[in-house]
Length: 355
Image (cartoon, rainbow, N blue to C red; front, side):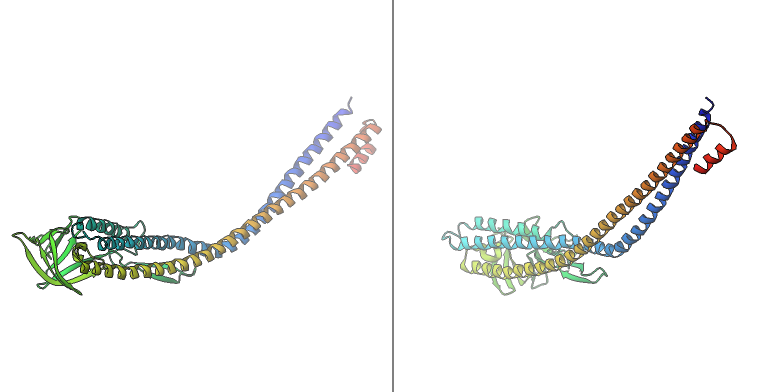
């Protein structure tokens, strides 16, 4: 039974050797995997170095495209509402009782105009290229290096003010529904104001020259004359068109609306051209980014494949070694059986040579 002791020790020796070789193979695999990963990461970094410029380029264009698209949509909306104004004036012209039905046409006209002022004057995007808060400008990049082009905004909020012969300024108060004289001193007050719909009467208008009366038919009736200054597309309030009661008033209204139509159509085309340009540059940047992403994906696949090949090779080498160790153990066992497990020098020498 003493023969079992050497066999058990030999088996333990083989197991220990196999475990050590396993650790060695694992360390070699980790080293090779890290080398593969580092090499592929350098390739990815080189691609990203250029691609990041186009990613930033595209990000800037995404923001400007949103602003310009919003401007195009709102401009087209204003143009559509303008048709509603033209229709209202046309309906008044076709109505033989237009003078008696003036309130209805005035209300319809004002309702559309208020909507148009909101559409042009208020926006979720910044800058608002259609508003009346001051000169607006949108700069957008045309290449990753930072070269830019500009789109300048145009006020599409129709409004006006009047400077009378003494230099007093009258302008609409949209919140209060009034027309009033504006004082330079914000603390100063005056009585030169009236209801914008019913408290003012147009006396005459020729070009920019205008005469009007505040609070007509009352003890406070006051007349003024001066210069009419238009803002935006130049569409005026109904009182400046005789509340659509007269042929002359309706003709002035239609002339102003046709002129405004040209303004809106031009702005739609201008913003549309800017949108096309931005979309072109954005698509170009997007293509570059996609190409980079595809290239990085290919490199990642190559990296995974290279690691799998290294793993397979290492597994084959480990299997060969395990087979050799198993074969050596079988030879040891056979010699031990043949020589009866003796410990004489000849047996030890044969075992050492074989194993």
